[in-house]
Length: 598
Image (cartoon, rainbow, N blue to C red):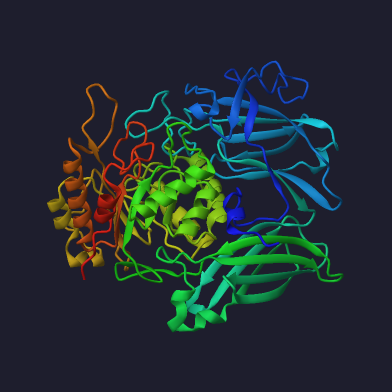
């Protein structure tokens, strides 16, 4: 029986799903802080060692959060997790994999004292092969050591505060396990990576797949693409290597007058169901079968405009992806609700800020039609270690997410956070340019927005951060037609210059990628952060309207309002931290969908 979209929605990896059941390991785990870092020398990974594990944590919520049951936000650089599992050996010709959605920042994993995996990078996932460590029918002990050094400024951490308490625009940390942990039985030879890249102009889809190991003999790959009841393509190719890349012709895309019935967009988020079957080319037996999906759409940028199949004005909000009781972690329902709220508010997208979002959220953005800017969490100190870490984790992130039709732009660097002086330090500018080019090499189908905010160098979109609260100033700076040729009336709207020396406009869209930030006047003594305050809802509506209208009636290609929800002391959201709108929903939608003239 084919999998449905509801099956995909609940899966922690919705674009590569097998019909066999997966086993969720969320829930209570034994837990211990290891501030003195004694766990390795005292062998806390051994199954007989239980004394240190005096607490219970609810996985996958970080121990700093209330939802975890620990709620200790102090500096604890080393964390240990322990739980028992009653495992069965996988069927003959199969393997048992343990998957982690994300562990911040460095992880080691043992089963019954045997090291089965390690990973560095706090926002991307990894897998451990448990097959050779499983004892059939026996109760075994799974242990995870997580290390997250709060004072390591070379560690990509995004908006997580290095201080013990949140200050200014920085938030409580999210350490350790913070995305799903799950078991999956897979064939001995199996798919590990599946990428889809649509090319509407040439009526084709590029498929790239990777196997877990080099095949011992030639395999046959069959791909079927279906939209509703309509079969769009069926293709068979031979796989002789570990990685196979091939183009699938989609004849229906050649009918130029009927594309609206096929294409993905915020207005019509059509998803194409995909099935990939790997078989032995000699005896014909099935080796692996996975279900996936993709969206057919073209992204373009020229003459100062952004295009998604056709000219498209971006109406985004800055999404921190943070919840009061669980920090960067969230339940599947909470992830879905954020996507629904954005659509209901009239936004056509979100700029996911300083976080690599859970694939379950990306699924709902795909399903509901929400364009996303995907952004690498920044480190704060420049150097070789920073560059190595960012490049490694960003490469994993792009590889994990590039098949999601909702992602329309990559943002590898934000506001020069890990490169504070690119105008004066050539090495820093080289890094900004190199990570842009790395992004384009990994995925040439999308724009890369680097460096977003100011000190722009190599970039396909020029993102500008401007928190003026006066609509008249926005109109003067961005309301002229020459902006579409990259000509600014004010090259210094903030503390830093917009363009680095020698940067020339080559048709890139200009997007006001952070603006607004207005909050309600705080109570006396209340910790808060905002760019300006108002007292009443009427004043808030007037301010929001004036700023949005100025951004829409301009030479800009789009805007991104700061921000989607209140987050900690940064209380400048369109919604409160618990997702209550600050204006009546109909009024909020009317403001954010202010019609564009001309």
